[in-house]
Image 1 (tube, rainbow, N blue to C red):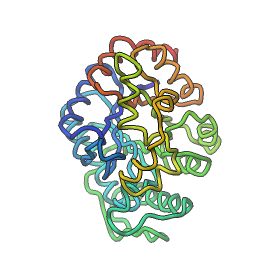
Image 2: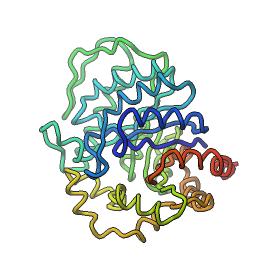
Image 3: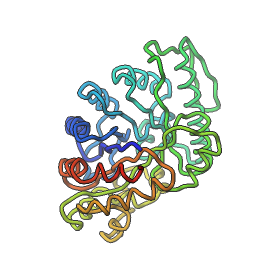
Image 4: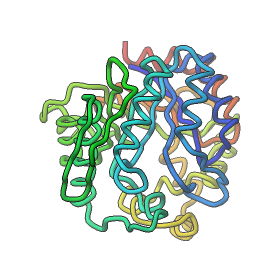
Length: 321
């Protein structure tokens, strides 16, 4: 098992995220993961820097810790040729520490370029398939062209390629995406402890790392932790069908007015008792995930990092012994 630290790019500016990543490496985390968004989920989160610049700076400031996007949508706001180039460059400057997490995206971030966001989940998956085929094609080297139903590539070449291409972890919430992760990805990415997603991935031939985000909120007491999560992270309780469809932070604010502290505490590990965090992590391990991302929505990131180092890391790793 590997344990990651989620860089909350919606809640902190770029220099603070870089500082947290350096601290996470010193505290013993195995990797950091950052969302690749244009907007935050809620306006009061207040941030959303460009993930690739932040990751490049982290690569230069660290030596050991892995880096990952969680996740990038390479079909609307970005063309996959740009992501193929960006990921190859980041793999080089991090000396092989980068994992490219990809998914079919959310309207929140993709509508901003004005070309629309597909209403059909089937079309989103088809676009993601074509994007992965283009990325793989460019990573072979040489000039390449591609003519798909949705995406095109014309006589393009990525000149700076690593000896080994980055791992691609594909986000999945069901059978079709899990199959795509096995077919065109090197790993799986999920946000819920669903064993059937891992089973679909394995039955389709997937053998790579399985990433999952574990929701938590650290503070000295559970109420303070839960209130912080309620203020900035209540969007996480809306479910993926809502999360992928709403266009702006104001819509997420309106959709979550009825979320209560009790609801947060039912989904997030809150407070400073290590047992609560172990209980939150167990379902993901039991479902078959082996790369757990600690997604802290509490008010004190340094306090959480210290808590992980001093009270949680060894106990978490012991769960996998």
